[in-house]
Length: 186
Image 1: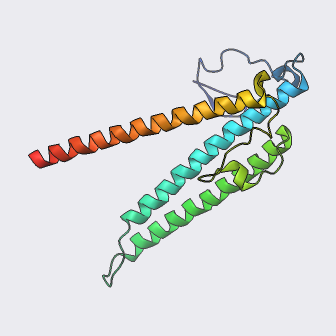
Image 2: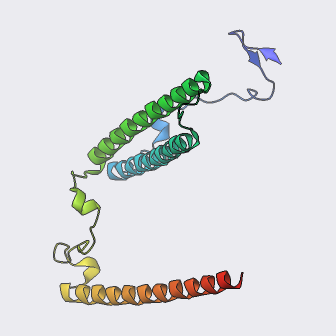
């Protein structure tokens, strides 16, 4: 182990090869068009957003687990220090959760700017029961299909979905019957 000029320790083998400086222009190949770079940046932002949502869910689950494990005082004198520690930990989780939501909002706004996504109404993002999720008349000929061909394909898809739903219901009933018989044996 040797020391660096700044006084810090240097572990032999870790810094044995010189590292060439990386320039900003070297990170982006010049042959990529601007549109492809924008798509890559948008995909990267979406990936970071996905990870942020996963962090939000994990933090929320931690909060719920902490709340489930916490006993109400109910007139019993408990250690005040323990409750204060739990309270501080809960406040820290809530603060981190707030920061994650702010980060997610920034990512959403930046991705919207880069990808050209305009503000979309909530009804377009979340389909409601009984509401058609998309209208074929709004979409121009998809993949060279005419509107009538598209309608036929949608109708067949709807029919297949109904058949699958019927099969799932039958399987659910069969499993229910099997579980009922097993419960009666015991």
